[in-house]
Length: 242
Image (cartoon, rainbow, N blue to C red):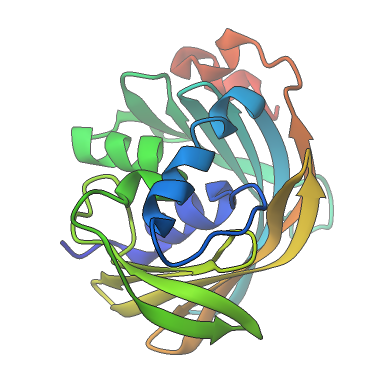
């Protein structure tokens, strides 16, 4: 199934988190990846991060800022646009998933997301969940000088990618690929920072058919900050960022 590259980018590049370091050979590598992630959500039960996004638009380059919050299975993404006068950025949209349903909140109103859109908001960051019994290690290749396993994803229900590259040293997600309505999209993860013994990519670049489309950079990353449940209630979305 083809996916919109902009939505896929905003979700994947901001929420994708690489795995805990630890070597693994080609035998059983898929099982080892999934086994490591059994502990990830317990350690990172809450996440708050600020990002900068630069994207190529029809009228040239566009810049935005995003605040991303996660608590358990709940997600909130606030998007801000810079003020033309150089003042405080304006909140232009908020995406919320409360564990069951999703919403898009804009100044024009609130729209409930379709089940498919909500599922994508819920699962875009959990790239390892796409490694089913049908996935396979298709080969090896270097990504930014790092030796990596090439893993083909046969079922995309729980993954935005058709193919991923995972480093042999540490099993870190280095690259992902998917077919979209605008061509073949690639996400390249780099500038890794250690957080609680895990490696977090602070830079994500998206390309479509080999052409750079957007870059996301993490400005701050906080683990388990004590997020209130009200943050994931759509009726209160307009209160944040005002």
